Image (cartoon, rainbow, N blue to C red; front, top):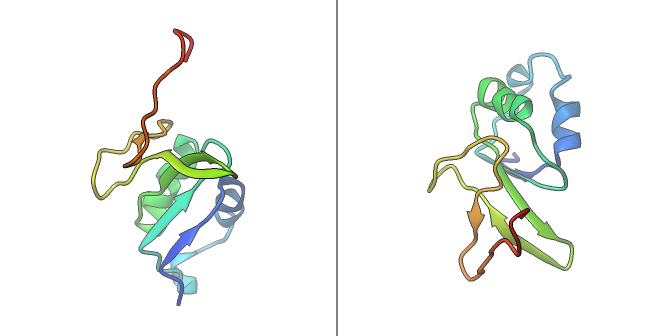
Length: 97
Protein backbone atom coordinates (compact mmCIF):
# COMPACT_ATOMS: atom_id res chain seq x y z
CA UNK A 1 0.00 0.00 0.00
CA UNK A 2 1.38 3.41 -0.99
CA UNK A 3 1.58 5.78 2.01
CA UNK A 4 4.14 8.39 0.84
CA UNK A 5 4.29 9.71 -2.71
CA UNK A 6 5.81 12.29 -5.01
CA UNK A 7 2.96 13.56 -7.22
CA UNK A 8 3.41 16.49 -9.65
CA UNK A 9 0.67 19.17 -9.65
CA UNK A 10 -0.66 18.05 -13.05
CA UNK A 11 -1.23 14.52 -11.71
CA UNK A 12 -2.88 15.92 -8.57
CA UNK A 13 -5.26 17.88 -10.79
CA UNK A 14 -6.15 14.63 -12.57
CA UNK A 15 -6.59 12.85 -9.22
CA UNK A 16 -8.96 15.61 -8.18
CA UNK A 17 -11.37 14.42 -10.89
CA UNK A 18 -11.76 10.99 -9.23
CA UNK A 19 -15.10 10.66 -7.42
CA UNK A 20 -14.98 9.48 -3.79
CA UNK A 21 -11.22 9.05 -3.71
CA UNK A 22 -11.23 8.07 -0.01
CA UNK A 23 -13.76 5.36 -0.77
CA UNK A 24 -11.30 3.85 -3.24
CA UNK A 25 -8.82 3.03 -0.48
CA UNK A 26 -6.47 5.97 -1.00
CA UNK A 27 -4.85 6.62 2.37
CA UNK A 28 -1.70 8.70 1.97
CA UNK A 29 0.47 9.79 4.90
CA UNK A 30 2.51 12.37 2.96
CA UNK A 31 2.80 13.86 -0.52
CA UNK A 32 5.67 15.88 -1.97
CA UNK A 33 4.93 17.87 -5.12
CA UNK A 34 7.07 19.87 -7.55
CA UNK A 35 7.42 20.70 -11.23
CA UNK A 36 5.07 23.68 -11.28
CA UNK A 37 3.26 25.82 -8.73
CA UNK A 38 0.73 23.80 -6.77
CA UNK A 39 -1.82 26.55 -6.20
CA UNK A 40 -4.21 27.07 -3.31
CA UNK A 41 -7.10 25.10 -4.90
CA UNK A 42 -5.17 21.83 -5.13
CA UNK A 43 -3.59 22.36 -1.72
CA UNK A 44 -7.04 22.89 -0.14
CA UNK A 45 -8.56 19.97 -2.08
CA UNK A 46 -5.87 17.63 -0.72
CA UNK A 47 -6.59 18.78 2.83
CA UNK A 48 -10.32 18.16 2.38
CA UNK A 49 -10.34 15.05 0.18
CA UNK A 50 -7.16 13.27 1.33
CA UNK A 51 -6.73 14.68 4.84
CA UNK A 52 -3.10 15.64 4.13
CA UNK A 53 -1.07 18.77 3.59
CA UNK A 54 1.01 18.59 0.45
CA UNK A 55 4.68 19.47 0.90
CA UNK A 56 5.74 21.60 -2.05
CA UNK A 57 9.36 21.62 -3.21
CA UNK A 58 11.48 23.52 -5.70
CA UNK A 59 14.69 22.44 -7.35
CA UNK A 60 16.22 21.64 -10.70
CA UNK A 61 16.70 18.19 -12.20
CA UNK A 62 20.43 18.44 -11.55
CA UNK A 63 20.08 19.60 -7.92
CA UNK A 64 16.75 18.80 -6.33
CA UNK A 65 15.38 19.57 -2.87
CA UNK A 66 16.78 23.08 -2.51
CA UNK A 67 13.71 24.96 -1.23
CA UNK A 68 10.45 23.59 0.07
CA UNK A 69 8.04 23.26 2.94
CA UNK A 70 7.12 20.52 5.36
CA UNK A 71 3.88 20.74 7.31
CA UNK A 72 5.36 18.67 10.14
CA UNK A 73 8.02 21.26 11.02
CA UNK A 74 6.81 24.64 9.69
CA UNK A 75 3.68 26.58 8.88
CA UNK A 76 2.75 26.00 5.24
CA UNK A 77 1.35 28.86 3.21
CA UNK A 78 -0.22 27.89 -0.15
CA UNK A 79 1.66 29.62 -2.96
CA UNK A 80 4.89 29.80 -0.97
CA UNK A 81 7.84 27.55 -1.70
CA UNK A 82 8.77 27.51 1.97
CA UNK A 83 12.38 27.80 3.14
CA UNK A 84 15.77 26.55 2.07
CA UNK A 85 16.39 22.95 3.09
CA UNK A 86 19.21 22.13 5.52
CA UNK A 87 22.63 22.45 3.93
CA UNK A 88 21.58 25.09 1.38
CA UNK A 89 21.87 28.87 1.51
CA UNK A 90 19.33 30.57 -0.75
CA UNK A 91 19.05 34.34 -1.20
CA UNK A 92 17.41 36.70 -3.74
CA UNK A 93 20.00 38.08 -6.14
CA UNK A 94 18.28 41.45 -6.64
CA UNK A 95 15.18 43.43 -5.62
CA UNK A 96 12.93 41.62 -8.11
CA UNK A 97 13.81 38.25 -6.58
